[in-house]
Structure formats: C-alpha cells, structure tokens
Image (cartoon, rainbow, N blue to C red; front, side, top):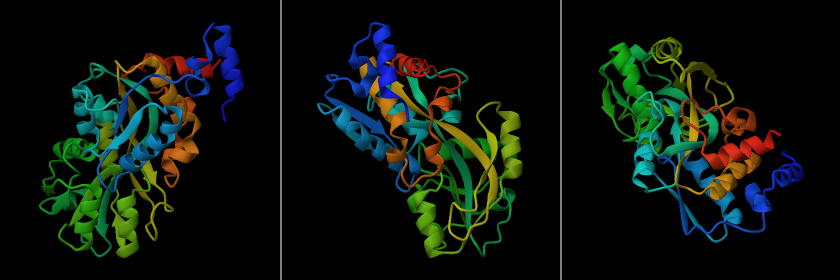
Length: 309
C-alpha cells in the first residue's frame, strides 16, 4: 500500500496543492463524461474495464463514467483517435505495430499481460498449431488483440485455418456445440468465457511454445515466452505459450488532473479492480512505467514521479 501522507508531503514540498495528488484532494476536476473502452463479451478487458469504471466513480463524483464494449485493442485504438472514448485498453504489439507511438495518444501505464490460448475440446485431433490448417477456428472479435496477433502468427507460419471472427463468449459457445474446431484468443487469465467452457466440457490448451519463439524472433520487444498455470482452468494442465503486455491508454488532451486520479486509482486499488483475475493483480507501480515506445501522459508521469520520491 502506498503511503498517501508521504505522497502529499512530497507534493507540498514541490509547492503543489492537495488536488495534484488526484484522489486525495478535496476538489475534483470538472469533466462532464468519461468513457472507458474495454473489450468483447467473455474477455478480461471487458470485466477489468468495468471494474475500473466502478472504482473511479467515487473519485470523480461530478463526472458520468461509462464502460463501452468494443472489439478490443485495434478497435480501442481507432475509437480513442476518433474521440469516442478517453481511456482504453490495448495490447502493446497492436499499439507499437507502426514502430512509432500512436499520434495523439499516451499511456497511463502498463497493467498486466495477456496470454495466447489455443483452446480445443479434449477429444480433438488438434495437437499443434499446424493442425488448425484447414479447420474452422475463431480468431477473435473484429478489431481485437487476438485478430492482430493471430494474423502475425498465421503469416509467419503459413498455416491457413477457416477463420471466424467471434468474441470469446461466442467462440466458447461454438466450440462447446462443435461448430468450431478450435478457438484462438489473446486474453488475460483466467478468461471468463474459457472458465465457463471448462465447466461444461473437457477441454485442452494446445502448446504454442514454438510459436512463441517465432514471434519473439521476428518482432523484438512485445512477445515473451510464458506458461498458463495449471490452476487457471479446472482440470486443464499447464500450457506453454506467448504473453503480451497490455497498456491503459488515454488521449493526450485529457486533463492532467483527471489522469492523475485515474493513475492513482489503477495502481492503489488493484485488489478491488482485479478481483477474480489473478494475473491482472500483477499490476504494480514498478512495472507500470514500462510502456515501451508509448510515452506516459504528463499526468501519469507526474504521479509516478511523486510516488517514487
């Protein structure tokens, strides 16, 4: 737990008032509405985004704060640029795809990592990524992190499934009734849709160890080898795969005072925001500033700087 009194003393020494500490001050910014761009049904982005909205409301009582369901990363980036929201979650590979920071956008911080899942029913003949060639596979919702990362992987491997653009929830339902052969999804763990599926059907996760190495070799930075632990889904063994960090992004024109409040809420109310999502509970100040080529918003940078003093 951060020492809020120490933070206030540090700000006072800099000649800043209590309102600069975000949630701590008696005054709140005058902002009519704040829209949080999340993800599709069955996704961790959607649930965490909704939890963050709930956590923010007491700190911005004069602001109408809502969560908007989206396709996920690619969709969120576009909607942020268009001004359809001021906050949004996105995987770092999608954010850095052009090799430059997205214009007009900055980071509140790195939050947690997503894991690429290749999910099949336990009696499926699919035993490797190559086995999905020619088979019907969910590749994520339109505009999703899954779609972006899977496109890269399919291009590198030459594997050509019959792709279906589906949310985690829709993909899990289709897998359960055998209208899909597999579901590929990049998401936090545990993923609600997969948890529900594992409660209905015996499932397996297919190893993506070789594919993790391939992505890391071709795209330096965003991809790291990882393991989905055995405790993640009921009766599902651990599985080697690839992980991708996620960022909480904002528009550059969102006020520093509001961004301070958002930043403090994210990094000091982790247990409430990430309840039920153990991997997302890894959100912390130490890794929060590791945002790659995306600069921190000045309001977030100021908050991190003051906390570290």
